[in-house]
Image (cartoon, rainbow, N blue to C red; front, side, top):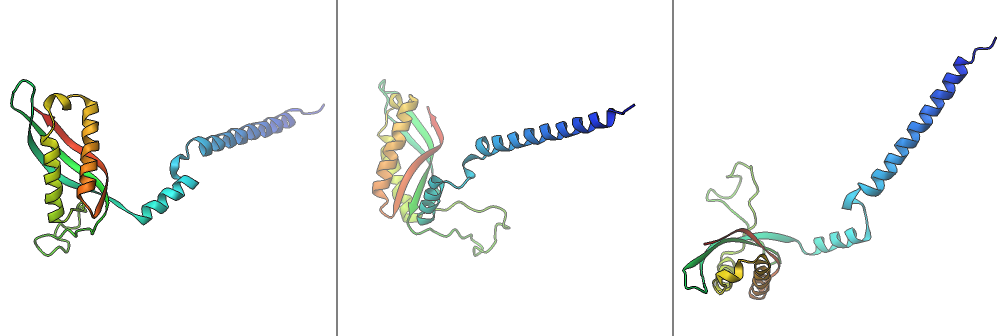
Length: 176
C-alpha cells in the first residue's frame, strides 16, 4: 500500500508558493505602473529640474491691504486682502534679526524671503492701484477674482524690473 499524502502535500505546497509568487509579481507590476507617481525619471521631469536649477522661484509676501471699492449703489465698500507673489530673479534680501542675525530665533523656523524694502514699497503701491480700481460687484464672482490675479500678475511683472512674477496668491480675501 502506497502513501499518497506526502506527495499530495508537496504538490499543494508547490502550487501555493507558485500562486503567492504570481500575486506578489502582479502587485509589484501594479505598484510600478500605477503608484510610482511623478518621482520617476522622465524627460519632462528632467527638463523641469533643469529649468528649476537655472532660475529658482520664491514666494514673497506683500502683506495685507485694505482698500475702498466702488459700488453701484454708492454704499461704502471695503476689500481686505493679503497678497503673496511667486517670483524669480532679483537679488535675494537676507533676513537679519535685531540681535545680529545669527540664530536669534533659536534656529526654529526659516523666515520666508523678503523683497528689498524699496521693491516691496513699489510692489505694494502697484497692488493698491489695481485693487482700488475694482468694483464690489465685479469681485463678487469667483471668475473675476481670477481675472484680478491675472491683472495683478501682469502689472507687478511689468513694474518689478529685476523680478519675473509668475503667480499672484490671495492668502486672505474679504469684502464688506
